[in-house]
Structure formats: C-alpha cells, structure tokens
Amino acid sequence: MQKPADTQYAIHDLLKSRWSPRAFSSQPVKAEDLGSLFEAARWSPSAGNSQPWSFVVASQTNNEAVHQKFVGTMRGRNAAWTKNVPVLVLAVVKLNAEMPAMNRFAYYDVGQAVAHLTTQASALGLYVHQMAGFDGEQIRQIFEIPAGYEPITAIAIGYFGDLDDLPPDLREREVQERTRKNFPEFIFSERWNQPLTLEKAEVLADI
Ligand SMILES: Cc1cc2nc3c(=O)[nH]c(=O)nc-3n(C[C@H](O)[C@H](O)[C@H](O)COP(=O)(O)O)c2cc1C
Image 1 (cartoon, rainbow, N blue to C red):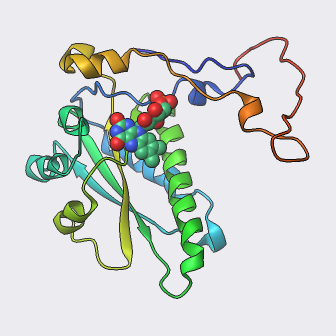
Image 2: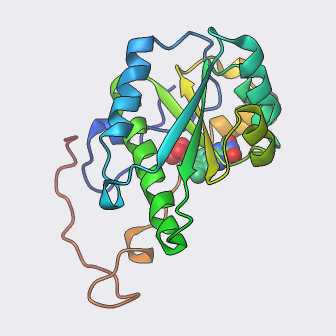
C-alpha cells in the first residue's frame, strides 16, 4: 500500500514514499539489507563525532523467543501489530555523566541516525515504524542494557504486509490520511512567527 506525502515542493521519492505502517509481512529481511541499514546509521553525523547510538536487534527468524520477549514490552496497541514484524530493533543512547548538558545532543544524534536508517530502508523497499510505546525498564532487563545507557525507541523493520491481518481499529488508522503542519506554522523568516515567503513551485516533479 502506498501513502505518498502530499507535498507542495518536490522531494526525493525515497522521502516521499516513506510512511510508518503497522501491517507488516512476516517476510524476513535479508542480512545484507539489515547491514545496509546499520551502515547508513553508522555514517550519520553526531556532535563531536560522539556516535552515541547502539542498536539491539531481535529477529523473528533468528530467535523467536527473544522476539516475543521484545513484543511483550510493548505498550497499548503496539503489542497488537509488532508480533508480525520480522525485525525489531531497540535504539539506545549513551548518556554523558560528566557533561549532562550534552545529553540533548545525544538524543538528537540517535534520532538522526535512525532517520538515515529509515531513508536507507526506503531505498531497499523496506518500511520502518518507530515507537516510543514500550516499557523501558522491562526492555533494559531483557537486553541487559548497562547503567549510563538509555533505551529510547523501538524500531519495526520489514515489508508491507496485509491490511486484513490488523484488528479493525488499526486497519482504520492504517488507511487514514497522512497530515502535516503547513510551512507558516513552523518556518519563519527573520524573526519568530513571521512566515517565510517562498515562491510557489511551478512544476512538482519528483527529484
Ligand atoms: C519517536 C517516535 C515515537 C513513536 N511512537 C509510536 C508508537 O509508540 N506507536 C505507533 O504506532 N507509532 C509511533 N510512532 C509513529 C508516528 O505516529 C508516525 O511517525 C507519525 O504519525 C507520522 O506518520 P508517518 O511516519 O507515517 O509519516 C512514533 C514515531 C516516532 C518518531
């Protein structure tokens, strides 16, 4: 199923076609492709090249029991759809005990690494769905995450599956229109709240 971004300016098709599905196919992800995703994350920029990210992978085909434990940490409706996702990844941030003021950049850096991973996934026909809805303490125990590190997001990776595998409420959300704020709400010129004026894009060709 396609849910391309309804853009006013041209963006690359890899970005346009990305969205966060819940209907995942159980088709395994090739090890080589998974390697490409983490390579993309690895080469992402970070403050002082600190690379504060770590990832813990739970693959359904490699270890069903660990995958199930991961799913067991999901909160709310996340538990209903993540059981079908072939690869679940925990993104972990390394915190800086000596300079806690730097931690906000560490969070920023991990998010950016995951953004790069996501775009690489798009290029390989894979989908990524990031999640904050999981029990961080439970997952810390399951994966033995040491002190000084913090689980931040869970990341579902795989191919789009079958809408009919979702419970009715999630099926409805899956087909909902994707929406975004408009430029004047968040892009300003010269001072806060003064919308930037841009010329209208004449032809909206994909880049
Ligand atoms: C940090 C973060 C946490 C999220 N947490 C959840 C979540 O717990 N469950 C869920 O279904 N989606 C979650 N999402 C997905 C967002 O709801 C989704 O990205 C947003 O609605 C925009 O939709 P799109 O990614 O399809 O463009 C999360 C996304 C991010 C970046």
